[in-house]
Length: 272
Image 1 (cartoon, one colour):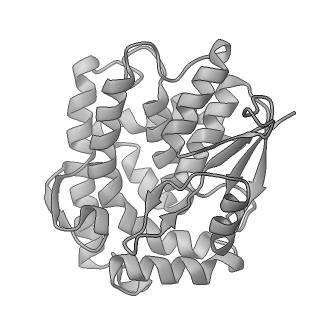
Image 2 (cartoon, rainbow, N blue to C red; image 1 turned 90 degrees about the vertical axis):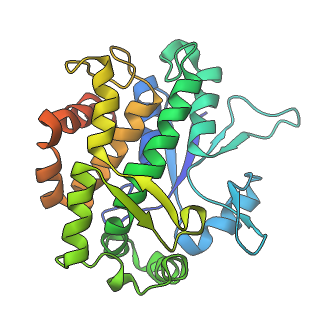
């Protein structure tokens, strides 16, 4: 039998969500067969409830929030014989290492806490500031069945029309991209989980962290591929899809480090 991964399609019928991309890439890295169950945004909650997936967070109104990726693994059933259903990309990666350890691990022994800290920094700096630039591009890349839901949910989150969230070509857009490259103090407003939270941006700061391994190091852990390499690569892979002209700039930043980070994992992303 085969693992099923639940994902959101873009108009081309391929994956769009970096969280789903990284799990599919890890499955490819491990050589684990899988199939994709495509789910449009309005159907995510009902679909995941039906298969018994756990919510990944709680919404501001107190209701459970269901998000992809989710995997269903019939080869390692639960006590009642039903497939093992796992939510949350980090937990999915942990599960895959536990159940499929002989095909290569993404959490080498003794590195999980370090990777967790790196993941927190990456999420609250680089990903937090680049996300608004993705929003309108993501909207236009979605299939018709998801666009209305995506617009309503993101406009509620950011308290702005989609077209007003870092509009491309505006002074705000250009300044944001300068911050992404160079690193600066910035206040992100609108997203409840990081509202009014001053964060240090961006890839310049991240490059300084990774340079501690030596400027010729290939991976987050130095010489060993790990979960966080797939996280980084998923961000760059999505950027190249949604904003190819910006990726052409980014891949030359900081001595070409980000192009290398993407290329190291690219074979595993080509079929996501």
